[in-house]
Length: 148
Ligand SMILES: [Zn+2]
Image (cartoon, rainbow, N blue to C red; front, side, top):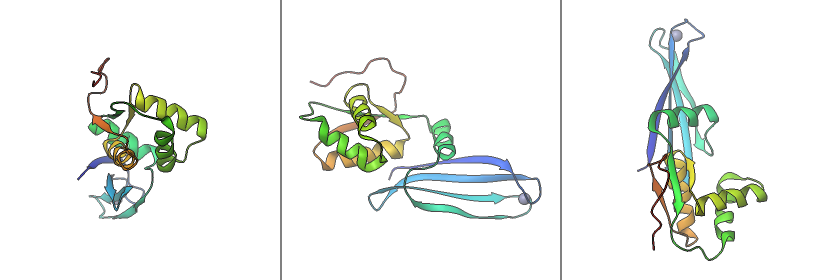
């Protein structure tokens, strides 16, 4: 199962201690999910902040990326038409058509970068439309082998 977790520390409003938010991103029921729970070791405050499907907010994504590093998703092999790739991109991220085109271009060129759960989710969606892609964690590598 693809799941990543990270901790974000902040100041507890109640007691001034250290409030720890544990955030998770994973794939659940064929959707991208994220959840967050917080707890303060000093005053015992805590609870569930969020649990549900959808794109994680930026602070959650940034914490996951900082801890685990980004993953890169590349479409491998020939793609008969970019349209199917664009459709998938729009299904998962509700971006504009021009932006979907840019993202589809990136996917078939250098690859798209995001969290592991996001890229695995996109990979699964692409596969359901007959597009093969693979996730790599070697972000930063200047070149990638082109499968023949
Ligand atoms: Zn506290």
